[in-house]
Image (tube, rainbow over all chains, first blue to last red; front, side, top):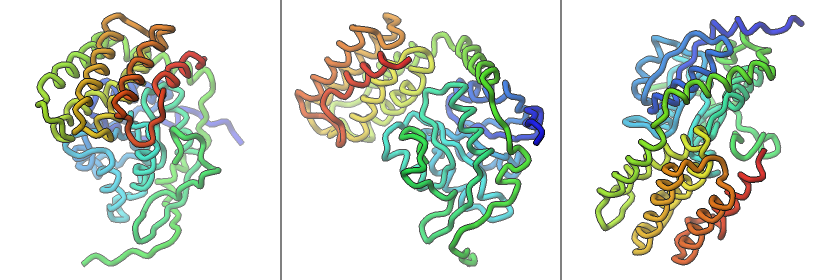
Length: 162
Length: 179
């Protein structure tokens, strides 16, 4: 199989949703360094939602604490979208909430990956690689719609275990 | 009324599975480049950390005497941001202590009289760390600062549910063992 060319990532459209301009710039900088060129940035979930149909991202990095719409509500809103609006959007939650209860809440809202700040280039690329190379089926039950949740022994580590 | 969607396992469309990008790998050189990109962004924000600490001090100064989750919400928001910024800017002690402050504000019993004293101590310590440029784990100073806050939390039995005694000291000690 031919080696993957990072130039393919030029076609990847990434949405970055964070209330901190510095964090948006940081995530943008890391992704740009690997060849990603198409970005849409938003400072809260509501602004991001309005841009979804226009930008049609392939994936989103989303902070938790934002006003007026926080990241968790954004995830729930995306998962409730009709089929043609891509409720399957891969979402990486990037947050300072490190406690297990928060991770579980985010997982139950339907995120793909959880990344605890502080953020490094390596940690962002690791989550990006995971989303790209380990696509998961979705599950719909009475109270959940989102990527199939990993079982405890499949969880990579406590800080990112989804 | 919307038609209920059927339960079960669903295979997302190829676009959502990012099939066209499958195989993307990031070697050591690429990761180093990404880390350099982070470092470059950080140079653009030399005053962000002290500015956030100043905001924290100021927000705390306006909180009325009777603490409630509503009145401390602005303080929580800034402490939460600080937790994210700290280690990113080379101040992991800030991350550890700001997280502790978030736990107190989020899960602690705000009605307890001594809570104010312990929150004061957290904010004063964060201020000192940034003012005195105590980067990294802070060595013996870091351990002492963490142990001091642990003692205050334990003295007034203010630990949030699930917290263990000496948690901050352990977390700072773990920083020292981290490569």
